[in-house]
Length: 229
Image (cartoon, rainbow, N blue to C red; front, side):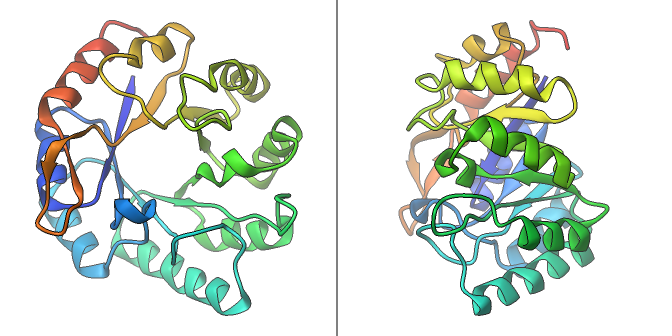
């Protein structure tokens, strides 16, 4: 069972590793929904940990419709992550009508190769999610991070299960959004082999960022260990 922990600070990083997280999604500014981490933070994490690291690429908060200038920024950030030694990239984009910008995504997939690729929660705004999933599979993504187009993944469970069947082991459907130690087993029982959570606790960093809670991570990891792939 893969337990991916979203880390935006050093305290969250330490708790994710000590709690037994399988993989880290590295970003910063969780209060803005998560943005591309600085090269300095990425370098620190890569030097500190041998845990697989996937890096979020998102240049600004808000929607996922990017200008030409922002697209150039994203290309530069993809190159930065490739050179860093991280194992994967978490990325996504939409058109104004919430359809997939296929040509743009093809360019990103080609540039990111051979890194592992996750299409992030921009998917939760995409039109025709079932057909869009098939297009994402055809593009060559390895997984989709989604809450099932709901605010939290437990409310999107029906669509998540549908997407899991469509993916049929050709692509990973990774539920994320409001997952914690109280509800994670719902997803394990439905056959999801990967889940994503930030495990937010009561503690915060000096700039107000929530810190991943060690005990929550430990409980989720313990729950996941009861389920075989």
